[in-house]
Length: 103
Image (cartoon, rainbow, N blue to C red; front, side, top):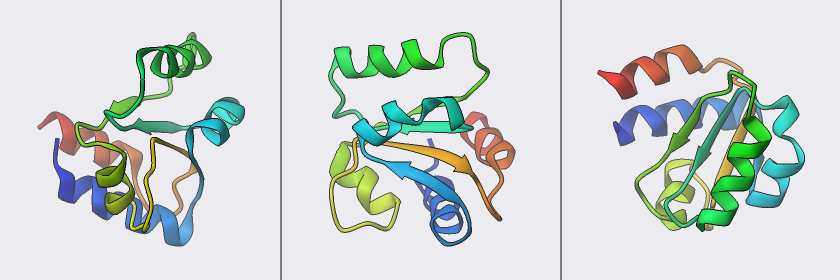
């Protein structure tokens, strides 16, 4: 996974888009999500609850290899972040992010 691509994506989303940060907020707002990114700090139960909420929807779920501290840094935040959901990407492109993750 390209950490730079994820960092660039989140810098645009944080400035121009709409998002939810934190496990509880993400779980409450899964119905509005267009992309979900989770850190490796999630427990199996927490990950299963997010996957259950996304079941039947075509919302990409990115499992970030870093822990919650690293995900917070990638998002440009000074605290730990277990999960982030993007409601509206603003000037960022979810499609470009997903393409850069595959290639």
